[in-house]
Amino acid sequence: MTRSRRLQSIVDAVGDTPLLRLRTLERETPGVEIYVKLEYMNPGGSVKDRPARQMMLDAIADGRLTRDKVLIDSTSGNTGVAYSLFGAALGYRVALVMPSNVSKPRKDITRAFGTELIFSDPMLGSDGAIARVKEIVAADPDKWFYPDQYANPSNPKAHYLGTGAEILDQLGDRITHFVTGMGTTGTLMGTTRRLKEHPRPIVCVGLEPAEALHGLEGLKHMATSIVPPIYDPSILDEILPVRTDDGWDMSDRLAEQEGIHVGHSSGANVFGAFAVAQRLASRGEAGCVVTIACDRGDRYFAPMKWDRHYVW
Image: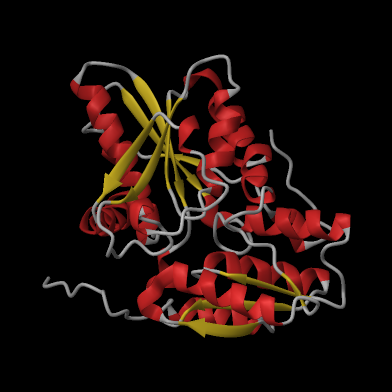
């Protein structure tokens, strides 16, 4: 029996997220199990709590982050929420650069923690935010601590120590495939490295949007994006493209049939896992496929320019 935890700080609440079996989807993949790790149950509401905490704690430990500096980074929202949460809890000031078209809930949440927001060109997406934060830091380097989540080894380290280890603890030898999307690529890189150390071979698949212009917020189409320095495709077994509509439709299906309300990148993750499971089932192979629910769907309630209009 797992005992309830008593915490000294909200910082200690990260991790140990549950793994949920998606039995409705499994009706179409006989012999193949599908699981999703509910990362939205972290205190900041997303998978990004893990790397944000790791990057901050590592920087505090080695002296890169001090009380006289302001933490600044580029984000599409979730990492920013995590920085803001832990900045408030640990007593460090935070500023964020994000595209101006990120959802209103994320802007409101980060501001609630006292974070300063700086907006970049919405048409340039996450790459525009990266360019803008580098300009700001270069203009006054002594003022800022710039963790750079796209290049910081503490990002995948968080998932190597946490996400990957937890999945193995939860499923052991049963897991055959791991599938997740690529943004900073920290989740994919760190988890894959941990899973590849397991004695049993585990196939690791990276997902990316099928189109350069897409509506899967937080994910990167690598061929047309700034490639994160932490990204190493050589450790992957496959890269799978996912269309925007497939990610959105799967988000809807998960809410209606599984009772979990997740964002569109999570929908894309589950769609990719479902596609891999279908492929295995079609060949008569058994399997156990795991993916990540990155965040909750309520962070996408505010209308965005690429929102679809449904006719019921």
